[in-house]
Length: 285
Image (cartoon, rainbow, N blue to C red; front, side, top):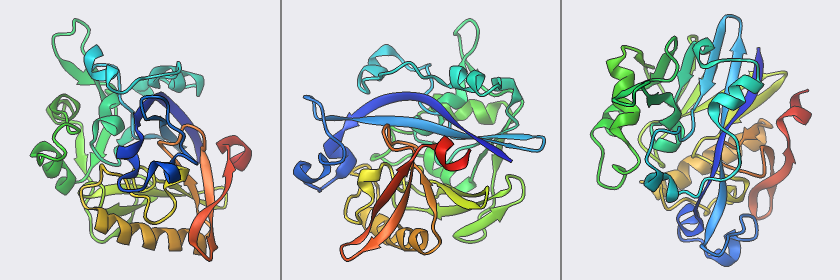
């Protein structure tokens, strides 16, 4: 098995929304804001090369939305999904599986693209199986008023229409899936049935944190995103995860942190805290 971080692009989000009720004087120490109160955000996917499988975890925002849409998110930098795949030595047609932690637009937007004449949409990875779970699919395709701006039908329905959509069966909160060769932790605080991959790699446990832990600044227990639909449940799930991560020496791959690629954690008298930051390459090469 070999893993490759795949940078799909950078953008910005409102710092207050990213940290909920936590005062700016606290969260700005780790996530400084610009004059518009926006903080740097990454959308870093992870590519798993495992035998004849090439599994992509999450796909970023994509590029098919309108300029007006993207203007809300202040995109910056020159990364994109196709470029990063090419730099890793691959093409979209090589991908065998696309695993989506959840179906918010910044996690699955790159899964679908415009067709050649821009009259409709098609899947970006024509040879891949697209993986979610049935409960989350129902949640996303019949969205609540809180999340409906994040679940975009043009990101979702083409997967189903192409016959590429597959559902992982959830049997418990944490389960190993032979189809993917990694464990999945199900969490419901951010959105219903978000799936967090836990991968055994080179003698270490690597957790693709998705929106369970957005950035290194979100490690303190009370630092919960305003985007979470059930913040009290996030607190419970996050507490259990942080304790497990310290106990088992997990390395946390931060999908949304533009400045900390991988971190580990430590127990302190104030609770679990960020310990060290690593680049992916220095940790695993």
